[in-house]
Length: 308
Ligand SMILES: [Ca+2]
Ligand SMILES: [Ca+2]
Ligand SMILES: [Ca+2]
Ligand SMILES: [Ca+2]
Image (tube, rainbow, N blue to C red; front, side, top):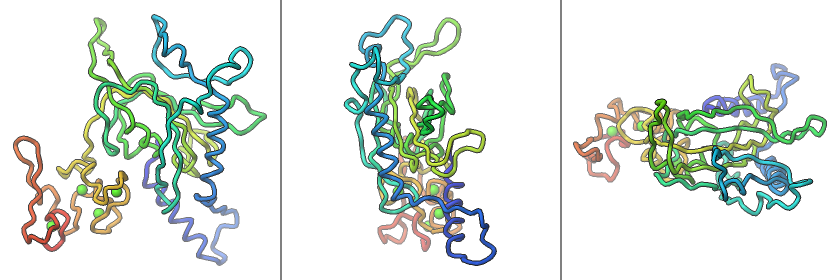
């Protein structure tokens, strides 16, 4: 799972490398491809996959008794030539690149089971199972996709720490309505959300795949998942839920940094940098609601106001 910080660091070092045009530049240094130019190429690869593959929709329509409600894909060919291509069943939305201003992606996702619980917020913690594959472009090395990570048991993730495309997809689904405990002590979630997302490299790992993963640079990623539970995230533990730390209200947690100290508000326990922790500049009421005092009455709540 990608952490945001290394990617940002990487981009900074590339910028520095380009500007510094002297002998100290590593002769083997290859700058990352332009994210804006890469985006449409990535989309074409995704769309070709969606045109040539289908999912096990027939099993979801008439579930066999032992069906596990896992989404699987196969090529439209041979006995499966008459299957409906994913392209006709996916939804899409426009999402922003987190690195380069102005770059956007048409993100495709497949909504198979919507779920009967709650929609997570983008900076929440989500409990899911998942399978992550990448699209393999080496004709000599089929199969078309290769698995790089999976968990068949529920695992909880901080959605601000996972690949952006998966974060962008999970917020379109709902959690389960609850769970039952089985006689053997395991739990079974009921009415969970299930889907898949097909993401361009820029919403995946781009030039920064996990070191041991063998994922090639610029790989398009596909995740299938079941969404079970979510929990409101407060990553910096300052008492303000992280979804409320999206000051510019654009659905991204990375680009709000009131005191410009490099730590976005969702991971900054003193958002205005005035030396008083945010937790001391808000009032958490007994019913869990939060009051934001504005002592100098300038319209800026104290926790975002460095002079009050
Ligand atoms: Ca934001
Ligand atoms: Ca900050
Ligand atoms: Ca904060
Ligand atoms: Ca303040």
